[in-house]
Length: 439
Image (cartoon, rainbow, N blue to C red; front, side, top):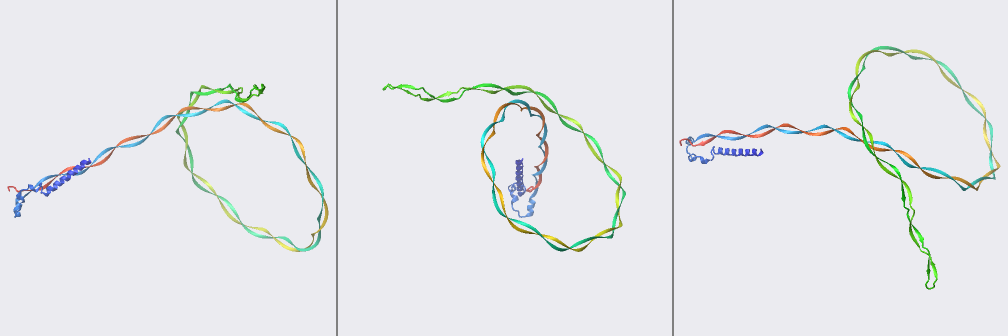
């Protein structure tokens, strides 16, 4: 399309250049086609004008016009759609069963044995010796002297006077006024709506479970004794000297010999496994949808006008005259003379011989026999039966609903505008210069 438009433009340019050339040569291809007499100089213009005549010829021009067309194109929209997918999920549940087994438990007991031993215990004895000391001891004596003293003693007297005063006493009176009041009374109405709920319905199934069990058996085993090295002396030998003929006895040599100790027999317990297949009842739950009536309460406010009497209190003040007695105190001073004895202390020193007992300690060691208890521990094996939890797995199918997102392409038509250049032929008259007729 692009190349076609360029070709049309090139053709239009060439055509326009041709038209321009034709216009320059007055519609002829060139001046060579004109006769020689037409190009010869003429002395008279009126004669020349009468010799030439003007004619017109039709020239077709190609003009390109711009036109708009409406086209449709297909556009795909991507839409995401949520699609529910029903599936089944396997849920594994771990259950436990009780299994009894026997263990050997060591029991430790603490016992005591009596043991005598000798110790030396120190015995302390307190003795006294007499020590004489001469000390000076102060002797205090209390004496008295008489002193005369004059002082003023206050004498208090209480008197009373009367006084009048006025008080305001409140008088309260209760009055009532009538008042209308609008209140909203709550009216309750019970309605019901349907509610869906889900319950789990148990379904019992029986499955066969393979268990590994066994028992303990006592097995007697003979263990060979260890190999030990032992020194063995050879018996003495007699040797005869060939020169002297004397017989001498030579002691045997010692050598190391490997000797195996006697075997020992032990008794041990061996676990013998055994496979047991037993039925197990499993319970799975099936979801079931049910509908029930659920009550709910609707409250409406209903206006209501009531009349009530509202009390209010009126207070009035009344004056009242009263009398009261006010005490007051008068003071008068009376002089008195008193004689009192004033003590004073006289000190004198006196020598005195004092004897005192001074203690001292004497230590002697005494042999003593004591008894103590020494603890020792004894161990004995006790058979104990215990219970342990053995886990096993139970699987059940639970329905699940999963939402899957699917991408979907939806086609739609979209209009668009295209601009094209359309050629059109335009006719126009071009003047052409030709020789006169009959010349």
